[in-house]
Length: 32
Image (cartoon, rainbow, N blue to C red; front, side):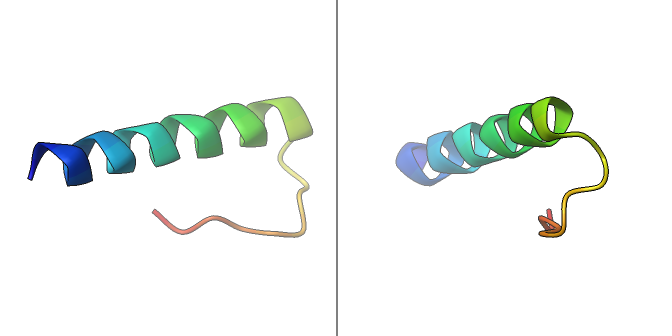
């Protein structure tokens, strides 16, 4: 179960970092 949590955390961090770097007007919206 720890692996799933790690994957979720990594996905959230990557999504947030991508969104911050790409700006708020990105066509693809990531749902959390």
